[in-house]
Image (cartoon, rainbow, N blue to C red; front, side, top):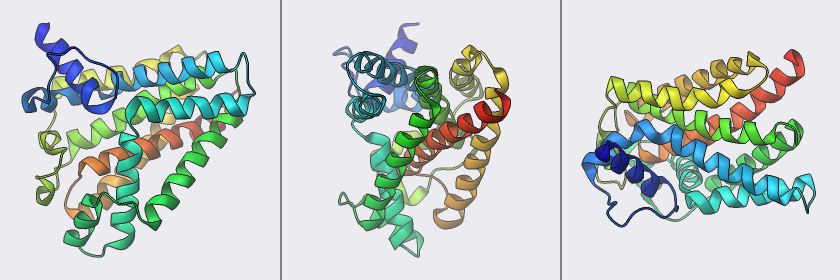
Length: 254
């Protein structure tokens, strides 16, 4: 149990800015096992964003409350996944070979593709959540953050790390997930969906699997696997796709 707690806090420290016990470090051993807690980290992040939205809604409009919850998400995670998404936009937008794509993604500067991608994906999040409406925003935020991170964990489980990128900061994530760790990730990722009054929400899993399948094929074609930035991209796109799927499910299945 003590080891599992350390693995969990390793994931918390790596993927968020939430304070962790002083004994927590970037142990490669623990980070290799931490991917099973990605969806649980999502539940925590989503819950904090939902709390910010709920508190803000007592004083501000729906729109401002949503923006504040999005700001909270960026602060809690240090824009970790958004940074990866921007890097992928720049890398795949401006590179035509594996080497060039990986080189661009490692560049700390954000280019035109990255800026455009960030603006569009943040706008999509805001608009989709606004359309979902205040009644369901809180459970949708929690579920969206959890299941989108599950999609990243699935990519780790099924795909290979791009070997040319082994010097990156996410190198420990190159280790494949164990089957029992993968099952734990699935449980944490799916659990928030079971609290919705309408279990048609489970249909959202289908488009999310399609997102994973598309990116898996795309990344393997161009760079021979995934990188840490690729995982962030899958998380960001999956989060938006979950929100859009939720809108359609609420519209057609009540």
